[in-house]
Image (cartoon, rainbow, N blue to C red; front, side, top):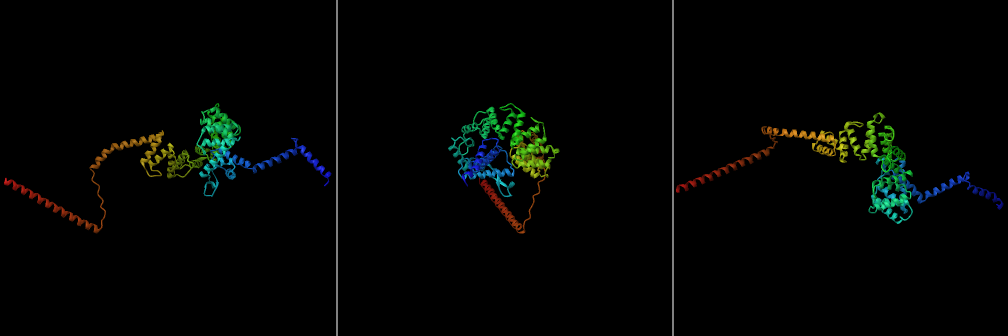
Length: 486
C-alpha cells in the first residue's frame, strides 16, 4: 500500500483522537468505559485488587459481628475471601496476614463439609494457624508502620488492643487508632468512638464518642450508624432524640446490621419515636433472628406467644426459643422448658423440661433455678429429691425471686410442724412391739453344723460353771478351818 493509501485511515484516527477531548462525545464515553473496565480487570488480576475484594468481604462481617447466620451466597463469599487471603499469604503478601489470622480464630461456620454437619458447613477454627498468622501480621505491621496506610495502622492498633502477638498496650492502640481515624479510615473512626464511649485508653468522653461515630456514619458504616442511634436514644454525647435514633437505626438495619434491627424492633414494640406496631416489631426481630442473633430469637419467640392473632402461635414460639436455647441463651432455655412442661407448642415432656430448666439454672437464671427446684420437689421428669429442690430454690431466692422465697417459707413451716410432732412419734415407738426378725432359709448341712456348735458351747459353759463352783466351795472350807484353829 502506498503512503497516500494510508492517509484516510490516519486522518480518521486523528479525528477520533481529537474527539476524546470533547466531554459529550459518544466515542469518548465508550472508550472511557472500555479503559475503565480494563483497569478494573487489571486491578482484579493484581494482588492489591484481589486483596481489596477479600478485605471488603471481611470488613462487612466484622462490622456486623453479631451476625451468625449466613445465606449460601454469603458463606461462599466469606469462604472465597478466606481462600484468597490464604493464597496471598503464601505469596508473602503482608496485608493478608491480619484478616487471615482472624478468619482462623473466628469459629465461623463457613467451611463446606458433609451433610452430617449443621447446614452442610463446619466451623473454621485453627488456633495454631491463627497464632502463626498473628505473629506474621504484627511483625509486618511494625516493619511497615511508617508507610501512609491507614488500614495497616488500624490492624496494628487492633494488635495492641487485643494483645495479638504482643502484650496489650491500650495507649499504643489509641495512638494508631487516632492516626488511622484522622486519615479517614471508617473502621478506625468507629473503634475510636467505642474507646471514648467505654473510657478505655482515655477518660470517658461521650461527646468525642458521638463525634467519631458520626464521622464513620457519614461514610455509611452500619456499625457506627447503630452506635450513633443508641447515643441519640439514651441522650449521651448528643441530645436525646427518638426521631434521630430511629433514622440512624433504620439506615443501619437496612444495611443488615443485627444490633440496629433489634433496636428498631424494640422501638416499634414500645412505640418510642414511631407508632407502635407489633407487626413491624416482629418483622425486624425476624430479620435479626434469621442472621442467628439469639437475643432477637428470644424476643421473637415472646412475640409469637403473646400475639397468636398474628398467625404466629406456640409452635413458632417454640421454634425460635429452641434456636436461641441451642446457642446457650438462658432465658430461652427457661422458656422452652416451660413449653415442654405445659405442652404448649410441643408435646408435653417433663424430662425435656427438666433438661432445659437445668441448662438455664446452671447459667444463673433465677426462674430456671426456681422451676428446676419445683420439678425436683414434685418429682416430675426426675426422681423426687427435696435436698436438691431446696438447693435450687435457695439459689433463686438469693437473687431476690419472690416465688422462690414463698416456696421456701412453706417448706420451713412444714419442717417446723414435723419437728413438733416428732416427740409424740418417738414415744409411740417405745411402746410398739419390735418388728419380727426375718429368718432366711438355711441348708440342712448348715443347720446340723450349727446344732453341733451350739451343743459344744453349752457343754463348755456347763463345765466352766461347775469348775468355778468347786473352786469357790474349796476356798470357803479352807477359810472355815483357819477360823477354828484360832
